[in-house]
Length: 620
Picture 1 (cartoon, rainbow, N blue to C red):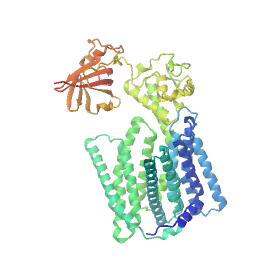
Picture 2 (spheres, rainbow, N blue to C red):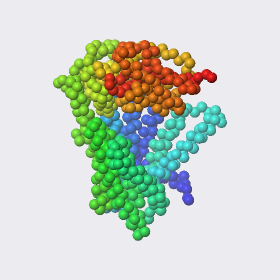
Picture 3 (tube, rainbow, N blue to C red):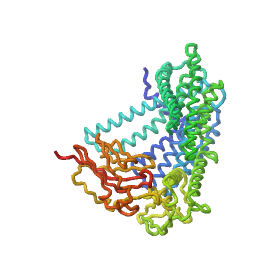
Picture 4 (cartoon, helix red, strand yellow):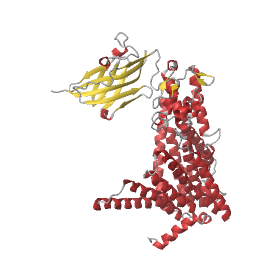
């Protein structure tokens, strides 16, 4: 194996820069902005600005590669090439100004999701832009093979280079007590991943695109890797998904939400596998590849049907969100690809081109993922508010009015009985909708439901100059302004028991304390780390007992008194701690549980609870 000389490496580096100057400059700028963030050279108020700079220049790397490749493919003149570069800078400027301003108290996710979509789309364009014209499918395959191998090579060189420099610095620190800041390691990593990796990758990007179509020699190692590594893995994954689908049909149980992501992931893995071995199928001894490829797309049909069933069921129950829209969109794309190949079409360029088109089209307009998901959740919000008589002329009835001169804590000026109108299910669903809208979309869409200016409260600052929402979630602000509470529903058919001695806890005779919480909304229990021995916490409605298992000890706490109206328990009235304390024993240990709060529905199950669980070892 002949290693390149220093002169040869310098020539390749110079050639890469002259071919892709703007992409390499963007990589250098990305590294600079990332290093500023690592070194904390920017204060907190301006850090978000440098994050946006970094994201914008990072997108510029593949964008300017695409523009150069397109110019080479279409034989642009120098003037036309620089017009394309100017358009690239305009697009990057539009991306930058789409990010939330640093002065906005609450950032939401939509601009960053759009950025991720455009980033994926531009990277996909790198794979097919030189072959946008008809034909040259063999050239397209050879080109992407070169991209794939060059990317693997660049990652290997970058990894070895970083590891070598990091170990050298560590040796200097250990042997010579050289003071090296920890951030230096991060700085070096950023430079290698951005500048070196980009430059190294660009240095050997194929130049003579037209000549690639005539190459008919394919690396044997790639076929071996695809045939004996990827294909067996793919078959195992398909077997697992088919077994799960059979289980659903037998038990007639709803499919888990994760199955949609698995179907998409395995489908894409299969496509990549068959793309890698596609040209090998032209030889006589490998005719099985073409037959196997068509059979693969047939096997995807039941799995994609399961994907539709799973995602449409959740959309029907909970409406569109961005995630559900993306899953459905990818399901539609998979369907199109399956139909395309099953009707006898074989142009492999169709896969990345169709995915890019669908991604871009779904990122804007009233049909796009953002408009559809926001409208869907706002409609659900309206539906629940109307059903519970909480909406009149588009405004929340009995909204809580806040005293705004009491920062950092807002004080309620008016009472609301909205909480009494909701049951637990609607309360939880309403909170989930508000949380989704304020986290992913603009919270101002929710603030329109109020008479008072909620946006003014969001932007208010306390005496330290911090926004009110820096320590208080906008979601909770919106929800509380509706007169609602995240965890409590305060209905007359609910009982709320709370200790009056929550912060005075007697632990005498016990060695370990575990905080235990449970909520019916998620049907999950939570233990603090000290409670890793807890493997069960269940309520037995028939016996009115709390059943727990701790390190093999099976415990039963008789809590029936909590459900008896004759035992002196009164809802929403502080209860003496001893009335919320229950004990159990085994031969070797003693146990005590003290409830901080305990809420249940009359004639129903426990809604939520919070307790201190204590463990003590008996002395013998």
